[in-house]
Image 1 (cartoon, chains in turn cyan, red):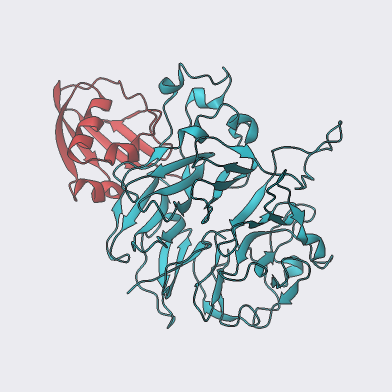
Image 2 (cartoon, one colour):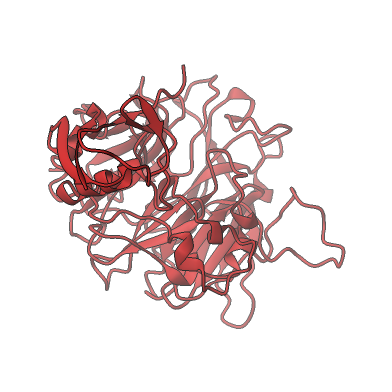
Length: 394
Length: 89
């Protein structure tokens, strides 16, 4: 899930779609689109109380940028200095190897993922981008700079398959998560590349993929695990228990309970999913207060990876015991549909009466007011939904 | 430096405050785009990426000639067109 902590009093679902963004009010009403015609990969409201909305926007012609609103989306202003990679000239005297693609100059394709910094640093934001890169803003989204400890890290090229396109729609830096209990600890995911952890707010990074399967590569001849190269789809540091992490991977569903005395290792809790459903999917959504409850949306990861509802039967799955068992939740959902729920397209509203929603690649929005026991249609006929987040719009 | 006229397509009007034509002094096509960026900050990055290349779905014409090299010289009275490319069917 891309938004483990949501703004207090969230009352609106924000849809980022292939053709613009929309605010979906509780009464079902939708106003005029924002950024009509543009690809909106993510819209996020600051959960730290500033009210700032940021939007990751890309038009086919004009390239990628970030927009910012301070009035609940009534007015948007483009970042004065949007994310952009360093020029090839700036890498001339760097320690990067001669064949590192950064030496030829990377061109930003799209901003994919927006994340607030620590609560103790209002105004600090992160942005994960494609090709793989990480940016930060220290002025509430007005100007953006590369996180040098990540973007200029000599080992980054090894971690992310030398910036190769690979993943459909481009490689992604996503799931940027600041530990609420340790504001210098940051987790992020690379598709592909794996999960990486910083303990110094981005200056240095190390892989944290122990225990994660990688069935798209042959076993290592020495019998050891791959340290990186994995494909996490969506990862979260649990806001109610930051020592517990969950993630949905290309190769299963995982939980990690922080180990103070050794290596951090993931446990494949997806092994407890029904075998005829499997444990492949994109979103990982966690309950805001209960660290044993998460929701996933399985998809077909068999044969040629159609990435649709398994057997054309949409369902959400929930665990109440940290992944030891799972319940299928499909009451109200269509009996037959072939959509995908992308990693940024499922959220909760953070309320005491918790509501959930997800958006589909076929432009439908489904909501639940009973923690997933039943679902109702909130919207149809929308463009491909790429993100769904909760915001408070007055 | 030569006085040239830059005509922009509607997809850039939000950057130029609705202006369709901007007159600037420039020695090259790149100069002209830099000049309009000084007046309308941010517009150049919508046309040229961070490595100095014209974005793949943008086109720049000097008169009728498509230009991808920004150091292409311009002469007095030249007209530069910045338009969205025909991308797809």
